[in-house]
Length: 122
Length: 299
Image (cartoon, rainbow over all chains, first blue to last red; front, side, top):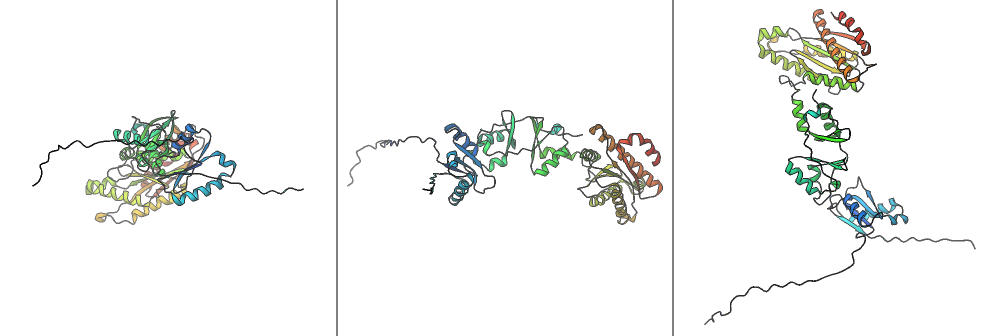
């Protein structure tokens, strides 16, 4: 024989777990280079506004008129003291092209090591 | 003459370059318009069209979605100039700019509606206004022009003998023959009035005379209904422009005189039973003084 149900149904218990992950906001929030896709959610003008507000005079925007994936490259000016712009851009764009499509904004961290070997007369 | 300012939309909506694309889309949708000029500190910096919006992410700024090279036109330009600009750049709207400020937008639909008033409903050819406008424009661009005036012989008699419906069919056929022979890059053909047609051309006078003869021959070789013979008489007038004082006033004067001389020459051709009579090249500068002499020679 089945026992009669005596307990009343109660409201479901609702709880909230809060997990907090704190870290320092990176200034600037972008890294060394940013490649802006042609159909990305932000375009070069928006990037310029952001960069100028957060890190004035530290970045340069290069518009790419004929590239099939990227519309612009934003790069840290200090990198250009280490490498000429054309050489740096051609490498970064070529590598970015391998992994990105026109809807993406890709950020790149660049480490440049200059190797110098000099000989002096004794 | 019909100018852009007479047909353009003057109620103007503009947008700033740092506004979002989705905001631009909302304004365009609510206002029922297809584009917005982008203005930064009073200066026109671009234009955003519905096509630009379709091709952009809605999160973007207008500055990152707009077309930067804006094709503009002054309000005093003619609707034909506007049409040519639209065809040249394959666009459907022009921003109308008076000196540096935007005064309106003109669309392809507005231009086509304006132009339709200048198409002859019987033949589908341009009306005389188009002829005058084109001639003035060619003179403005420093071209040497010639006017070929064509008159269907005995058209009044044809109308009386065969009826006006038959006469209208003849005029339609005349228009088709002429339209096939003109070179659109060099010649502008119009139905001038009644049974008269005119061509303004950049062909040199000698070449214009040969072309006029070619037109006459085309009629001679054509088979017409009821086996009647349709012929035309042609007058050609042309000349060089030099020493023009006021381009707008003088170019209108020159065009009117050329058409007058060519029409008188066609009358002379009819009287002399010659297919083509040509008025020799003259300097427009001296035309004012020689005008009576020219007319006397034509009589």
